Length: 118
Image 1 (cartoon, rainbow, N blue to C red):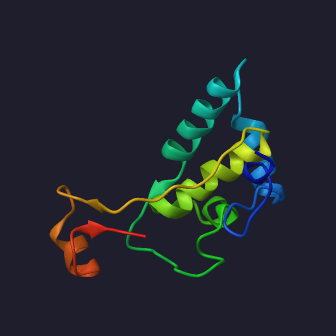
Image 2: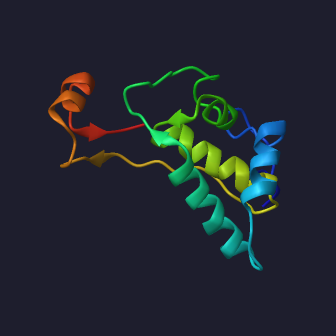
């Protein structure tokens, strides 16, 4: 369980901006309520932009999403996990390959596929 509370490369839960974000948004009486509040803060507060995919260690960090105001699914997931960890809620990342039947022609052309994989 301790691994799911510790900072990691992408899940930089010890970054001052992540800690401040978690303190501001982790509102609720239970861990579940606090995690849902963090989810909404990440989902609604940071624009999803799959065309700005910095596939670098820095580009994938939770703190980078906070600094830039944008992210795609992987760094936004890192932000949610980091914020949960900073709030004392165990969290980890999980990935799956997904065939995206709603992707745009531009996205399929950019990726060369309609399968979102990591």
